[in-house]
Length: 319
Ligand code: UDP
Ligand code: MG
Image (cartoon, rainbow, N blue to C red; front, side, top):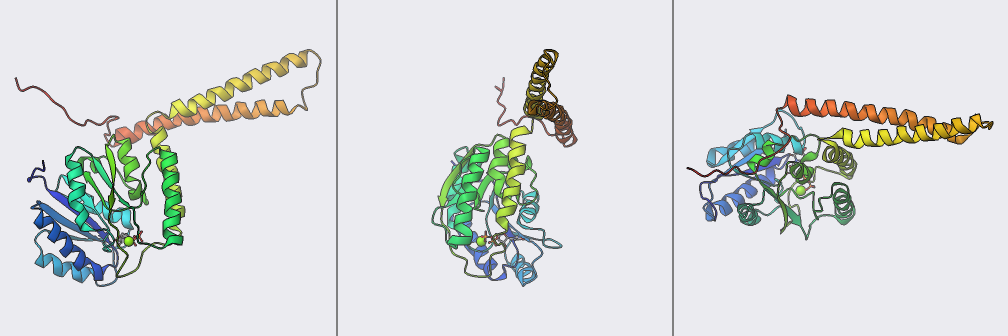
């Protein structure tokens, strides 16, 4: 069962959430104490320009388990979460939003699933309390699309309430708005993932920081993630293969054209000739792209000392 010595780090990014933050932290402390967890709460103030700074400073004097990190300016949710992850000291990390929309009472459920051996538990806001037109519908489409493209089918990529082992995030670098693709990135690192239903509440204080334009950014991030997922280790397998097929097809078509030219036919005006040329040029380009990709991937892995594998556990008898 749960090892009482495993520390839990709760990470909350906040941008202008001065009204909700006190209630949220009190709720969290209540849940954590009643379960006898060893824990810390890390709140990252993402350059807020309301009273968040002062509220957090006051709270951190009152609450021992609270660590408040103030960023110099507003970097965005992903960066704020990253700053939190980098400063955790627990073995299990829980992240959630600072607007009281996620329910801290779900935390024990997440932790018990981690204790069952999963590396990442994702919340699914199955009764989501947000607007239909600009939230729930774009999000439903985005979830389907992400599932289709990445092969990891979750109902709710956008839910911030997640729990994972610290070692998972150590292997992942987050850029742009990539926090919502954490399950996909974790899957690249070999994580065991599970999605569970969680409670969702409507926003009581403050306002949402995002508009419909987020959908566009999510789509761009999806392209990046798809690319990483597919080509990270062996770009040459994909680009090299298509390149060679193009070059060979171009070669075959050209040979055919040369033969009929010798038989006295005029090939100068044949669309097939243009097709063969395009295939040839595109093939050489794809092939070179594959080679370049290989070089880049080697730099990517070696510059960061990233192994191309991840170990779950090493066992040895103590003889
Ligand atoms: N957030 C942040 N930096 C930003 C935007 C948002 O730290 O630049 C925080 C915000 O305070 C909240 C969480 O990220 O705790 C999710 O934001 P929001 O509730 O606005 O998103 P929604 O629930 O509408 O998707
Ligand atoms: Mg919210």
